[in-house]
Image (cartoon, rainbow, N blue to C red; front, side):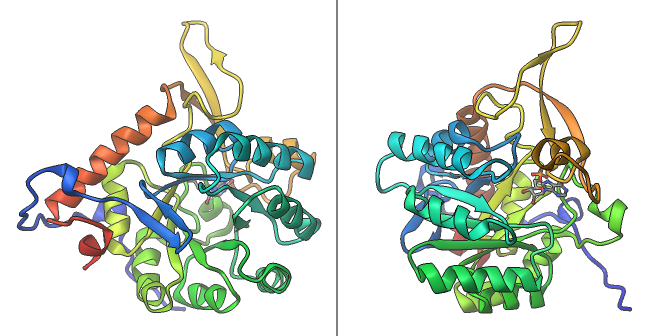
Length: 322
Ligand code: IMP
């Protein structure tokens, strides 16, 4: 057994650097997942049933960010969401949707690609797995480069190398770090996401396979740290939870305060809803206060990102990382 020292977002601060940037408008926070998928804002909403359905994906798409339609529904329901996004978004903007790696995943993938989805997210809790290898290779065999394949989650260099070798175009990094995650308590497993990002970044840059930091991002400062450590884009759940565009009912308490539910997909509540039974419980369910529109929240995060780049004297992601 090796015991390594790991640093997490709250253990780290970036040292301010000399800057010759006169206005934050000179800063470009844009990112790319590949040649065909460019984003003005490096933020991705998590494929969770209390975060991303059509309304979230549409709003983020229009802002130049990305929403991944969750997979915890029937294929027709997810396809309906993809169609709604496709009709309402300009043709050149990408649509992303999640699939699993067992059961009907190939049928789901086929329907979604036919429905206009250009980014498929192979979305499982433990992505460094033989079933991921099989799923990536089957999808690559059938669709070649017709679709961008995002895969995860993983936490180690070996995980990153393997998923890249199996055909992933981008990889979600982060095991155990999500705000609604109880994987570390239930299973004893996990790695600080910042540490995982830092360790996988070299392989990512050398291979061209993009790196997405996922889970535990609490504010724009954490985003700047994750990007500085090597992330291309940032996936968030809790930061967008409670916005108008998230699915779910508005709940009012007796004092008149309003809330929505935000829950882990491995929470008891989510598992009961999508498969009618529970297996290992690795997530929790929470009430979060309503907090306005997603554009307001993402605009605030973007302002923070620009300001963070400016403290490092960086005009873009490349300069921040170097
Ligand atoms: P947050 O941004 O810290 O709220 O984390 C969101 C991330 O948590 C998602 O993108 C997933 O990677 C992860 N996640 C979602 N549901 C669960 C769960 O039930 N258990 C553990 N991790 C989860």
